Amino acid sequence: MPSQIDLEALKSKQRLAWSSGNYAVVGTTLQIVGETLAEACDLRWDERVLDVAAGNGNATLAAARRGCKVTSTDYVSALLDMGAQRASAEMLEVQFTEADAEKLPFADGSFDVVISTFGVMFAPDHARAASEMIRVCRPGGRIAMANWTPDGFIGRMFQVLGRHLPPPPGANPPSAWGSKATLEVLFGEDATSIVATPRMFKFRYRSAEHFIDVFRTWYGPVKKAFQALSPEGAMELEADLLRVLNQMNCSSSGVGRRDSLVVPSEYLEIVITRK
Image 1 (cartoon, rainbow, N blue to C red):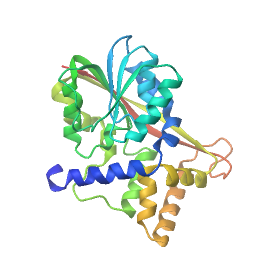
Image 2 (tube, rainbow, N blue to C red):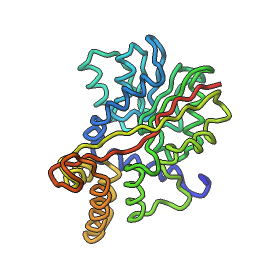
Image 3 (cartoon, rainbow, N blue to C red):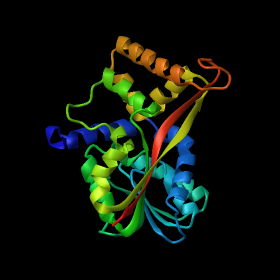
C-alpha cells in the first residue's frame, strides 16, 4: 500500500533517473504509439487535450497534428524543451508546462481528453495520479493511455531490474497500469466505459548488445541500475537482459542473430469515458 513507503522520496529518485539519460533517444522510436492512441480516442479539431507525463511529446504531437489545443506536461523540464523543439519544427502550437502527474495545476474539468503514453504509469502513487487525470477531465470526456503490460517485454525487463535492485517494499509496479483489472480499480467508479485493447510495439535494434548499449546510456532507469551495481553485478544484469532479449527476438534473419534484433513488446491501449 502507498502508506507503507515514502512516495515523495521514491518520486525524487525517479525524477533523477529520468533526468540522468535522455529519454528522447528511445522515446522518439515510439511515435507510432502516440499516433494510434490519437486515433483510438477519436481526437477532434479544437478539443482541449492534456498530455500527462508527456516525455518528449509523442502523444502531444499526435494530438496537435489533429488540430487539438494541447497542453503538454512532464516533471522533467529538459524533455519538455525537446518536445517544444519538435512542435516548433512542425509549426504546431502547443502549451508546455512543467507539472507533476500527481499534482496537476489545472482546474476541474479543464480538458476534453487526457492522454498519456508510457508516462503516468510510472507515477509512484497510482491512485493519486488516476484521481488527478479524472479530476481535470470534463464529464463525458475521454482518458486515453498506452501502458506496458506486466508480461510483455518491457514488463519483463523491469522484473529483471527489480531482481538486481529490488524496489522499496510496498511499491506498486508501473506495469500494473497495463492490467485492465487495475484500471477498473483506479477508474471504474468514475467511468461509463473502459475499453482496453492489447497492442504490440516492436523494438528494432542491431543486436541485443546494441539495445543494452542504447538503454544503459540514454534510458534513465536502466542507466541508473547499471550505475548502482558493482562491476560484477552489472555483468550479471547485462547477462540477464541479454537472455530475455535473445529469447524474445523474432527477427526474420533468425532468432539470436547478432546482426538483427526485433523484440515485440505488448502494451495496453486504453480509452476511458468519464462519467
